[in-house]
Image (tube, rainbow, N blue to C red):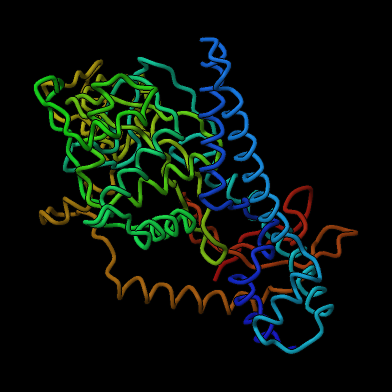
Length: 472
């Protein structure tokens, strides 16, 4: 089989054979699995309440329901895990459905070989992504611990029209159970898609479930539901529809629950938020923080994808709550944020533009304080000053090279390289006993030797090995 056909085969298998990627991807269970598990957990809590209130006559019925839901969830889990295994039955089934000719044993061998290579590549890519992104650049950590009344800050542009941006500060006002919030969103979706005769539009609900499973392929048409600046909602009476949804939220007080319900009902589409809650359920996140922001906006925070693309390899993504504790942050990490209240200390500024970055994070002078200010801390790049002096036409000012001059310089540099390589490349190292070949290289780092050419042993540049400057 040619390489092209082999690639096409696995493109088709990626769709019809989920086990092909099971070794490097998390197992994705259908929505019904999470629903059955959540219903069983709810009934377990109800069972505990009945025992405490000594209503024993109702326990038999609840035990039967719990047992049925657990068996249903186990059956779904077993079915999904079986479909993710490599075996001859799955391959034969795919060959039959796809009308592909060939030996099922040959295809199974090829799949197993592909899986081994996939595991090696995935391991290497994971190590690279962890070193270059997750451990250094990612704006959220692997674990995030927070408690009630903690001051937190958004690390995501959550809702710009509602002034909820990267850097917005709030206080954790409580926590809502993830399964409850998921059930609330689904109930609101069902209400919005209900037909005049009272029946639910199953096609719309199925579309929502499809969005949940796809994860990344989510609707981008989410409208902006504003909470406004009002911190009190006592004067607004709940409607009948909102009142019917209240029973789904037991982990919040009544007034807060109505605020949450009204915001969700004001959104035209909930597919994106539902997909994020599904992600939290699948990841084992039991509760989601409820944050009250500076201007009174009340939001339940769901996981967001923090990603970086590695060209030619793929995208590394960490799903995490877009929050961090808001007690203090370094100037470097504050770049791109808009802070509601800010106090910055310039005493340790050491780099060009650092003081500017710090002071420009605030919304205005009435909500910020600058400590240890001095003109010495306002450092400007010499390159920038020279460039601006040239624009002003000052005599002797440094002029940046034009594109034509840069291309001519690159052409001259290439000609010099060829001449030096013809003369010196391939020489043997001058150290006795070293049979290494010498290479012609150019200094790339800034400094007094920038651009100079040198000859160096391919094995070592110290201890008597060849290392000498070359003149073009």
